[in-house]
Length: 310
Figure 1 (cartoon, rainbow, N blue to C red):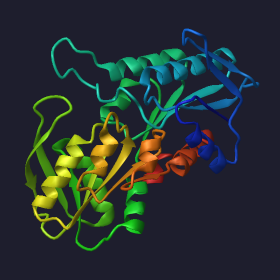
Figure 2: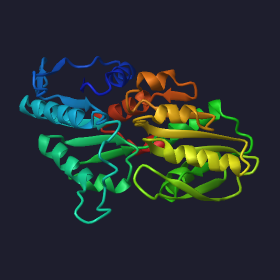
Figure 3: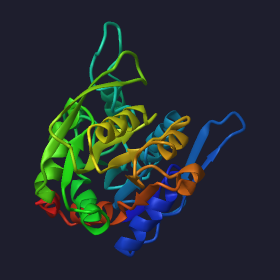
């Protein structure tokens, strides 16, 4: 087994390597003057079980092309099996035709990864579960809920705890966390007037006197989460914290979170935290290295991955 990494989140790849007691493979990923990407694998991978770790986060297109070119280089170097490990799968929010004459970009990206030469895909908390079916190769969708539940038990006040889904679409994820914490569930019902903006309309469930934990897979602009936190506090909640798997946090999201009524935002390192995120007082980052490392180890040894979440 050999591990390789692109440039999107090398610190996470190194942490996974430390968990597996395996150094990262030697691969050169550089750019020509016009930003064209060039990859050279600088060690023998013939007949090896290769894992390529790369999040397709900002800049999404550059990191996606890096991944595709690394996979192609591995295939042409006669690797026995190539697994694309995507802690964050970009383009996952484009999983259906929401309007006429729009693409299903998640399916396109799945096709690109498959055609590049990947034999298997491993990812974390897909935005929509059906994206697994977009791939014609085996795909493992790992869940961060056990990781988040453990952190909540270690760092949060469990008295009067209530798990809250920030929208109706995230109820399944919130229910899974609530079951692990033996906590009740509430739902924020919102209406989105235009992309990037949301208006909280109603809270389904009584949050009075509760310590509320908002749970979701992606936070981008932060508008939905901040509105939900404000609505919970107005409804009588004692506190509002949030646990999100993928901290995209684009634009002015970090300052918006810092100035919000959120007691704490906890994200994972599936996307490399920026300097602004690391410097924010109420944002904390937890690592997925052990979870991904164990899943990689089990895949390499042909053991069960799903038993990680029993």
